[in-house]
Structures are given as C-alpha cells and as structure tokens.
Length: 305
Image (cartoon, rainbow, N blue to C red):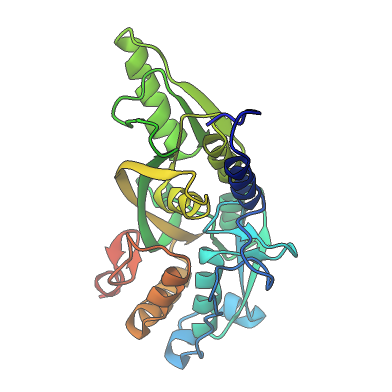
C-alpha cells in the first residue's frame, strides 16, 4: 500500500504506528520490550546436568553466546539496548539448568561461527539453520523447526507460487533470498516472464517494513520472523501461502566438545518440565516445536546411547 495524501487519516496513522513498531524491534511494553505477559524463565540448576558441562566452561561459570540482532522474535534489542528474544530466553534457561550464568554478546553474524570455532565464545545463538555442511565443523543443539513463509498486505492477491513480476523483500543472505526468491527469479527469466525485483535488506525488520508500507509486494522470511511481523503489523500484513522448506534451527557449539550433550540434556529437562513450551508460548511461536532434544537433528537420547 502506498501512502498518499488522499488516504484516510486513520489508516495512515495505523500504518505509521505499525511501521514504528517494526523499526523499534517491536517494543510492546514499558518494562523493556518483551511481549505482554512475559516472565523470565530461570529454572533451578540440575546437578547431574551441571556435571556434564565441560570443565573449561564450568570453571568460568558462564555460558557465553554470540548473537546478531535484530532478528525478531529470536533476538533484538529492547528500548534500553538490552538483548532480548526467544533465543535469549532459551539460552538463559539452559544456562540456569547447567548451573551457569548466561552471557550473550552482540556480534557481526559472519563472525559468530568463527568465534565459536576459535573458542572465543561457547555457542552461537543467532537463528542458525542446522545444515549438513555446518555439521562438518560444529554440533547443533536443535530448538525449533522453521521454514520459509511469505506475507503481504491483505487483499493483495499475491501468490508465492506465481511470483513473476513481483517486488519481494528479503533479509540479505538468508535462505529466503538464496534458496527461495532468487531461484524463483531465475525460473521466471528462463520462462521468458517478467523477473522478480528482489529488495535485499540488512535486517529482517527493514524487509518487513518494506512490505508493510507498500514498497514491496511481499515479504519472504523464516516462518517465525514472518509471523512476528504479521502479529505486530496492526492488521496491515497477513500470512500468504503455506510454510515450505522446513529445517531445524540450532545452537552451534564446537564439534565433539561435549558441550552439545550438556546443552541437549538441559533442553530435554526444559521440554520435560514444560518450560520450553512456556518460553515459546510467550513469543507466540506455535509451530515447529520439538518433542525431544536433538543434536544435529538426531534424538539426544539415541545419540548418547
């Protein structure tokens, strides 16, 4: 939707409010930006799980994590600049079960996995997709399945299966760009149809904003990211089509370091106690939840037998 001088004032105001919410990382309350009704989840330490933590991690008493906001609802900053989000809540709860303090830090996305590999940080928590290629160098403690989901303004008639000629917003270098929109554009060109105009942004919130204000016909993003943008859009965006290309998200740790097993045991504890479900419920993530802890998409209990 284009904003024009002839648009009703109420509608213009609604779009501006929604746009401001997206730009600010979807801050929704005075306490600091967490969703309404949010409460911290900090379980008691479980001694037998704490005993599984590698000695070099246990000795410093912290679980250090690299993350790259904004990537709401997984990680973004509140109005005070603090790191918040679904992954931050899971990281804090996992660390608590392991008897550790959670210590996240903002990093350039491209530097997170090298820092994990170098031992500068313990884990990468920044919406990492668990892939076969990455498993050559890292173990992944999975926490959610997510796919690609499109959104557009209500009544737009946009069909993700017929994208030729559309303007589509994506976050740069994400699977939505590399595995969805650009391959579809290649297919359009090969068929002699009008190409897709791909608008690539550095952050997911700016990509969502482009669809919100009508600069793009649609947004393509990871399903929880798209759902979060729709929920915060004041009705100005809606999900279109089905989620596709589902894949596991995971926390990256050094290969064969022993930390994956400790994190997976803590994850299983959160699942068994219902605290995993509680954390995801607070962030309105309703699909892709795990029934059991997994390492590299293999059930943790089987992997340790």
